[in-house]
Image (cartoon, rainbow, N blue to C red; front, side, top):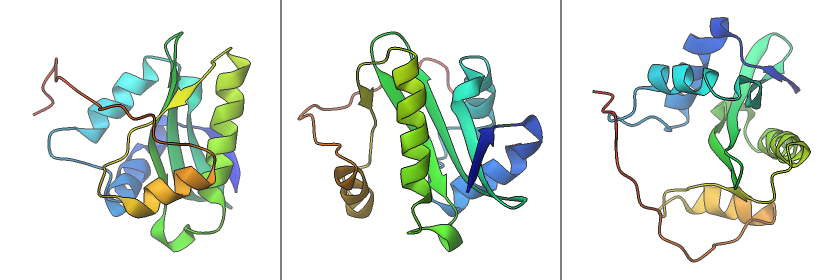
Length: 139
């Protein structure tokens, strides 16, 4: 898999990928999420390609204290082949190059398979509760 920066022409494919991976929610407009990401560290929004086929994506971010990963997705037909691990290594390296000391991510507590995946990469439960507050409604 080759990793490259997201191009605006990738948007429809990326949104379809997120939908196929069950990452979208009715209260989050994925197109607005993409526009927001492109306004902040767009170089940390990447896609994975196999040949000319877009098969993966990930958004990484850093605000000076912690790094984050969002929308890590691999097409169901290409899962369990190491692509997600490759994307995570890319993101960790990119964040480390920015001086980022720690990366955080959020996973739905019911998603045991994804929790196991991140555990296999050395991530552990920080014993915190994630809270959120919508400041700008998407819908």
